[in-house]
Length: 78
Image (tube, rainbow, N blue to C red; front, top):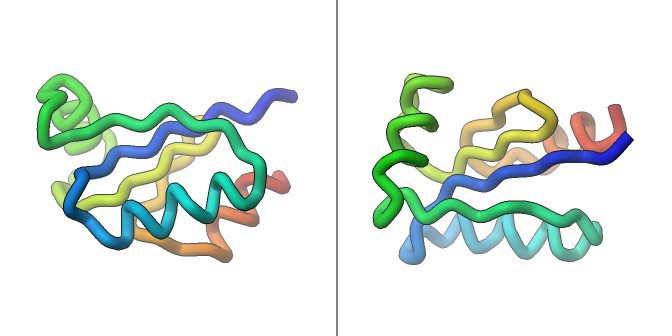
């Protein structure tokens, strides 16, 4: 099964950078949405999670709010 990963982030968010670097280190391909510029992605993120903070990571339809390495690993290995 192919893992589908989306990262909702902003360029000024240090935790977003950390999350993306972590995914790269795990050789996980992801789609990055800059919610400071992409209003549609921002609205989707808030609608799905109720959160306005970033990063929000979507792994196969499951959302993780913030950088949570254990949760990321769990969903990647599911």
